[in-house]
Length: 205
Image (cartoon, rainbow, N blue to C red; front, side):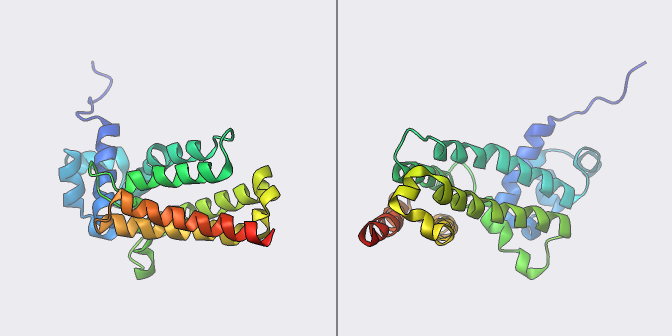
């Protein structure tokens, strides 16, 4: 007697495929047919393994946060480097992902967050997107507030404004990358932003 029906697909592979569809088309634009076809499974199997489309999206979004965003945070935590270099490395790591031709360009989160205003994103999915939108701003604010080098440079005085500037740029580069801008073109924008933050405060000090 068997212990149950053996699953005929790898759940992690299927979830990765679903994440790629949402990354390309957004939540509203990704149909069940798109998802099922990409995942290589049938509708009953999808519902058994992941639940409905919203539940699948929540799982796919968490996968994106864990597998795609976490490595960028590790770069930011390299405290042996000067603060500006840490931020530059962190932002270039994100830009490299945004411009990578191996998957949908741009940012999964930025694309899906832009759909929230339409009201077409269900509550649980909207909740995880809203939470993901707040995390970078808080992370950068904490960095400018708590870093000894930031405090020494006086960057902590405008920590929230500096954090918003970084996050706004990354949202903009996501859109530009999706439209075909190159990594080299976007790097200039990063350098200009960091020049503005660091040199402006140096003049005030």
